[in-house]
Picture 1 (cartoon, one colour):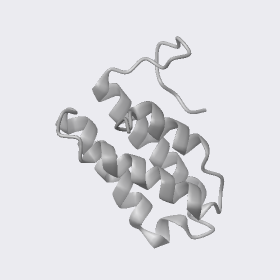
Picture 2 (cartoon, one colour):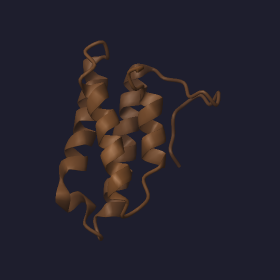
Picture 3 (cartoon, helix red, strand yellow):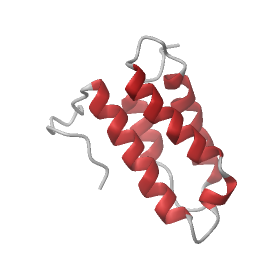
Picture 4 (tube, helix red, strand yellow):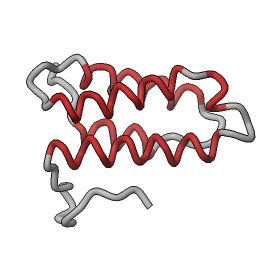
Length: 98
């Protein structure tokens, strides 16, 4: 099996709908696998570790806090992608989840 990439994390994030704990678990698994990948730059892994910590925080996804937490997750993934200097497959110049 191929190790996950930041694109896999982005795809998992895009599948996260409010209230979907299973999608957040899948995102956490991908992010954790990337954090564990010692070939990635430390700054990218740190940002992904922050995303994992947020996903592990039960208060972050309480009903009222969930929209803000999803925004924070998106930002952590953007920072990680920036540190990896990733260009999305779509040809866009920057990775944005809007």
